[in-house]
Length: 79
Image (tube, rainbow, N blue to C red; front, side, top):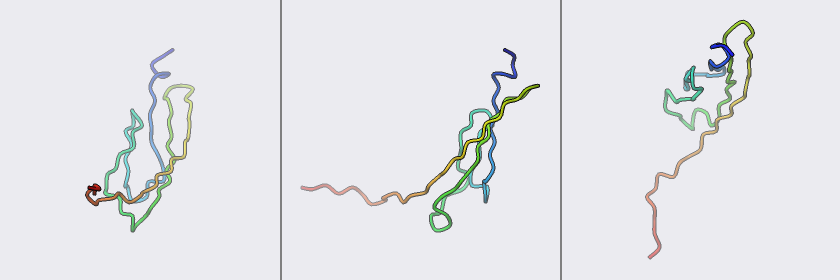
């Protein structure tokens, strides 16, 4: 095995509005803007992973992100 076999780099497409970013070394998807349910309730990204070198391998995975409402109300307890 060479150094090229253990290094994996990540990137994606479909990031309309640059709402997300991706860590190129870990593949973590991170929010860069606040999500607004009135603008969009779902996002589709194509995450790509590849190793560099003379014979690189490439994998593409679809990622479907759905936005839901959180309940901001304080908890109520029965007495």
